[in-house]
Length: 462
Image (cartoon, rainbow, N blue to C red; front, side):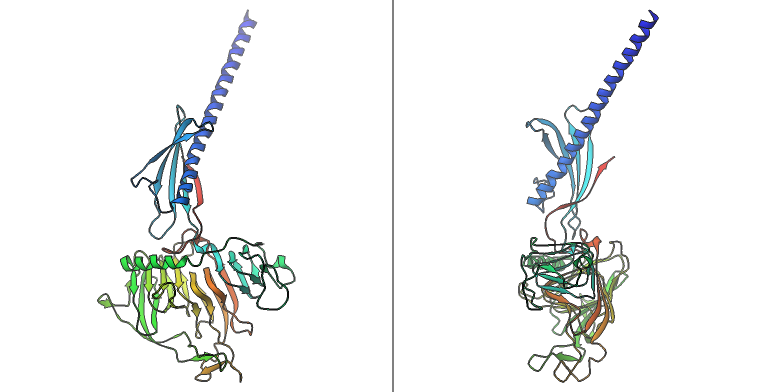
């Protein structure tokens, strides 16, 4: 009798344990199902933003939370997810979505996930171009490189190099067509450390005109908006106290050049004389950087200085926006204080973004750069010979033909062929193009974007 009783007790314990394990299994299974319901909410809203990128109210126009039924494969309603949406701050594309999932009759309760979604800016590329591109042996890039045309790359590329073309006739030499991403170095594997790929979808450069219109509206409403200077343009110096000095450039440095006797003279693109002016009834010096970070100038612009905690986008563009020719020039260092994403500078030139003759020998530009209709690079200032180039007054460019190091910490977008160096050895001997990953989804204010919403990060909420 005692033995039978012991067996009965043990048997009951085993049955009870199995029942508990089954219940725990069902509980865990239901917990995973609830998690999938919450996940479905994130996927749904990413789909919604792909079709309505400016809608952060789930199509209702009113406040959330926004509740949706969740159906299984048979179309049966088995639960729901509830969305809480935090729109992007001004000038950003990052939206935060919290999705809480629940199963009908589930004793476990809700589970929630929080995701940050953002549209990649043009700053996703270290260099993006709409023209044929050549990167010389003195170039080293970190980050992706893309061109809508062909690319010859003879330096070192640490990121993926892509092209939108399928065949390429390199204009720099004769011979048969080559790959759209190719090198003239003996070992391609030592060049394309991040790989290469073509064809890939192109970047829409024409769409940048609409972005200029948005930036002008923002500058007029809440930023700094400067009309034509009736002179050479403006010189803006950013400062670490969150302010800037604005000066009117009355004359460029007196030094012009031309390649040969058949071509016109072009200037030094360096500031000669300048003066402050009256701005909003006061001085144009020591003006606060606007809260929305947008400065729009309807003239040529020289920029330099340093920021500390500021995020700013500067535009040089004239009417009409589709065909204007405003340029931007940086001849002296333009740098961050903080390299953790706190500081951000965007520089958008309607035509060319350039460095002039009297640029620093070791020039650093911490910024995302766009040359919307023109090129990004240094103007050609060659060593004078009897057959050109020529300088006026004679000898005015002596000592400035060859520069040492150009460094960009940010990103460069150029419509036409870029270049800070030339095959005759003039320009910048070393070019360091360092992609700033912090700018990809947290670009400068109102900076142009490309593509659709991507998931930046995804976490379960405790």
